[in-house]
Length: 414
Image (cartoon, rainbow, N blue to C red):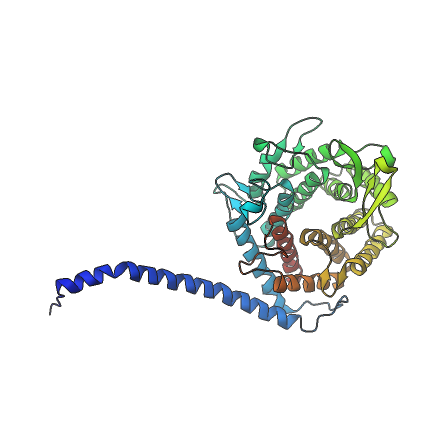
């Protein structure tokens, strides 16, 4: 039996094909949107359930709620995908500063957000056995991927090579000692896991660069910004301690440990407040006036430094100090499930808490950070799953919370 159609009916069917294709496309888009909205709702249900009894005091529960274990992993994966899709420009292997090009001062990101991003990349590489999601086709790890961007900031000018604040081919910029130190710390974290000699050599070079910022004014310490001798900051000395300790652990060279102790004594002489949190900087032209602003990352990096010094030296004074700083930072920065600082600053604070937890196995500060992370996801996330408190969402903020979710997922895996 053969079915035939009149010519007019055939023409009508042909004319309707574009509309049919458009309808199918809309249905597919709606299904995809429904999937992601459903996933987000499921995550929120987990979070609401886990936080129904949360309070603004440290929880001493030894076991984090199991319902949160997949949530942090899923959040981290979503954030990684968002960073890749929203902020990365594959044609030049560079990242954008925010999700809104018209709000950006320059076409591409300054170095600072990449200092945060490389730490996330090494955590993601180390966390699971899955193949890295490579933005660059020839990248072998996430760290290698972001290094293709960071190397575009590499500045060979005297007195030593280092990383400038902006892309060299687009004019470069000032060099900040702390930006370089954060990159070195992330590379050494990666080196501790994969023993890639490139990472060790790059970190040694960063160490050499950072030491060009040290002098005996005010008894020592490293300046914050190359060529500007107005301030020496906690943020340019605390990370220097951690980087020097990492290099000591990797090489056994006592000069690195000596540097760490030298910087440690200087920071505590000038910038540790009586309350147990760290002030921001000392202003040398103003008669060594102290800028008493407090940011969570300054205390976080010093908690980490003390915990590392204890592991290396077995001197109980360091672990006692780490515990005191952790308590002081909690009392100073945390209330109503909020750590009152920026996302990335709080990610560095979490590094300190995590390093202390590895020694004490006391989860109270980790649990507090989990409550904070849950609140951020619930209240400070837009429909695109981008984190922030302003309409414009920044790469630095995404990297800060990505690091927090990665670290918490590792902690809750136990």
